[in-house]
Image (cartoon, rainbow, N blue to C red; front, side, top):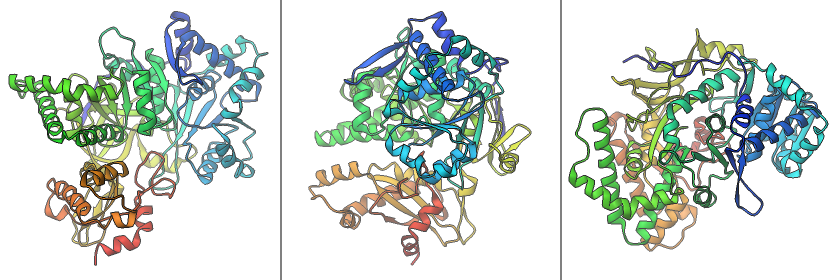
Length: 607
């Protein structure tokens, strides 16, 4: 199949903007719990629709008092916090535009985004962020104002705007139209300088209203309960922003967690008890890895692996039934599944808060077997695909017919087309209007409303999309064999000891790989093996560890031809990090930077 379309579920907005829903909810259901906020003692407190509206209005007045005007752009450099959502909707209320920046961005990255967007003001989280901007402030002639959250920014804004009347805010809000820019989100810059994607109120409204309409039933853990989600994705990324807006539109209780580290995230999942979550595959890998390590510590590796096998077979049988290719789980399989639900699966759900029955995953590909395991364990993960340029999701697996290992079908109103060279093209009301001030790249990406994504993929007979790689990342060996590295890398990374993997081999005689280690898993493995703690240099030379990584490589190679297989690999002592310029803020590999940084190691693979 070359093209697939799903009819729309919601109309394209003809008036209004993103902030209107805040005021509508406060008017229609003022006591509804809209958000959860952790207080200074660490206790989660409810925020009603009316309270949320009042906070948005107070901050909107403060922004006006401090000189922010309709159409101005305001940078936000902050982790995922409650205050970000208040400021986002306050900016949209007065017709201003937010420019999100990763809290880990360097001074040069911040300089480019603030300069290119001509931001007139900026909100930062703490002193380190303020110093980062301060180091380049002399090159930002348009930047007139900066607020710091941890230095009383919200109190200042509320006080500064106290004298402004509600009618002033209301006039600004009613002047916002769907074709106005709502936010400029900069791409992660894997292939060069980040580009500013202009996302309109109408495009973002269409995206979020569509996701709410199509997936509302999976927001709940059981019929009739309060839907809630804990947002720990970065709000500087389009996926996190989509979740933020969709939760407010859908009346989903929204909590914020600024840390994705398991030690910080897992306690808040238990305390907040979301009914569903949205995450990247890394989170699900971590939950699975932690469960397996606990089983090993308790001497229950065999039963755990059996439980995994039963979960996978159970979910696969349900998948076949959904597509009319099988009868569903057998009686014997149902009994096995029921036993392990109490012994294993329930504990995994408890670690995720106890109420989660559904989740969405995006950002990168999820291993099919991992998705089947979670579905069999009682948490169905709906994998999707999208870009900043599509306001987040462009495709997603439908709740009633999930095909694991794919990124689903187009969301309602979207069309997916596979070009002659295998590139994925997308068309729909949620596609961006272009790159800010960059006609050359806009013209190269948008063709009569079609977005050329740069991703390679295929559509099956039912319209399900599978992403196979990036056009610019295809390796061509010296023998002329084209190799897509992504699938190989994901399969190697499926091994619990592997942290990251990058495949090399462009203009080389064969394919090879550089592999980094998952520190938590390695520490556990050393303990189980009865080995002493080893320094990084000694660790990568350990013969038993090398054997384990070789197993991961051999397993990955079974899915490709001999010419595409990884012939040799090298284990690196340290992970690729954003700090060293080897990862984007969204944790994607910067291939050219990695190969340049590890030139000697790559050369050694071909001696």
